[in-house]
Image (tube, rainbow, N blue to C red):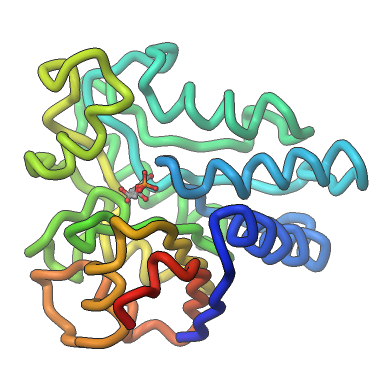
Length: 242
Ligand code: F6R
């Protein structure tokens, strides 16, 4: 694991965007795995700035998102579909047909999961997967005790994850109880992984990941120890217990 320490969230966003942009410049038809949540928002903003200033093109990039809530319509204000359009896709030149997010409204969710893995396979696999981390070590929506062998699957969200995401909804009752997520095995098959970690509230998770280094399904992010190309960009606050 390569660890890049940065001062704060602003620096993290710049470094993360640079990492992704360099990769796209070298491989214009990259398959880019994307995440939602608070952490990557700054990096997406920097990518948009770069697109406006330097014209880095996403014309041939294909994206696959990690996850989506079950039961939210695409145009729901809290769907990850809406999030990605608002925070990135609407502002760069990527054709929407090349952006992929699991469909949480699919009639047959299991088929949707299987098809999502097939899609990733048909694209040639993920070249670079962007990740954030949950307080409990989740990656994607793979909660503690998820098998490291999982492929895209349906998950019941833990109450800690639902409460962590409550801030985006009017009320906790509105936070969906289920989601579709790439499995840990699906994530680990990405050729490279970029994990972004910011803020004091992630410091215990970072301690577990970088200091305790105990590989266990109880802490999903520990599955990354086995991956040969993981880069972590973390700010000082997140690293404060290391
Ligand atoms: C988002 C995702 C989640 C988040 C994690 C951290 O697509 O898969 O694993 O990366 O919950 O979320 P934030 O960045 O909001 O702290």
